[in-house]
Image (cartoon, rainbow, N blue to C red; front, side, top):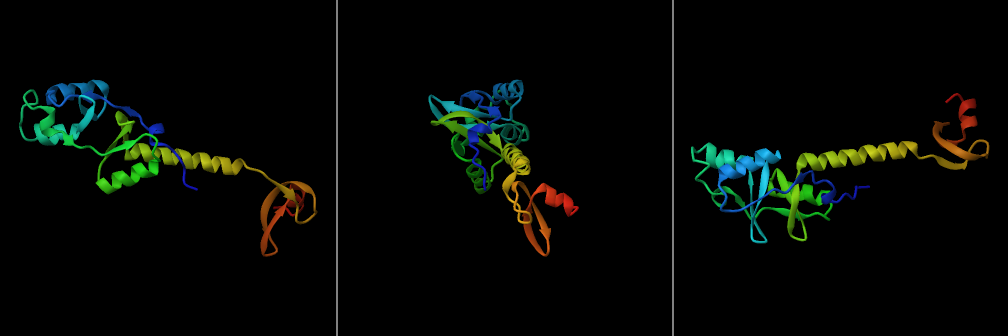
Length: 176
């Protein structure tokens, strides 16, 4: 069964907010100070874009532009792909694959709360799968032994060419 994990449960990177008229230099310092790779660009109450460390490298530094002169609105990604925090992580994975993006802006009621990356989503799925394995290993099955008719914890074994559910004492007597 697929896990039901809300995207909001996976958000590790809180949203850093900047303005479209901020300089790229200022934003780079904010990203560095907060140890994040992206910021949400907000004008009033509206999300108008995101700017990433990659945008700064590709659109400013690599082109020899002065980060103190370039405004965020000149290099930001406009109309960023978002997902509400109550959506399932499988929806987030689908959206990221469909759009070919590395990070996804997570919102709550249209307001930015943070980012998730593909690595964050895969780590959440991996944690869920490990918990599922541990849970299934710990689950005991009770019922009537198919060999002796005694009620108690049962073990699935393969004997006489088929699957049987037997008690511990029958299992021990068969040396299984």
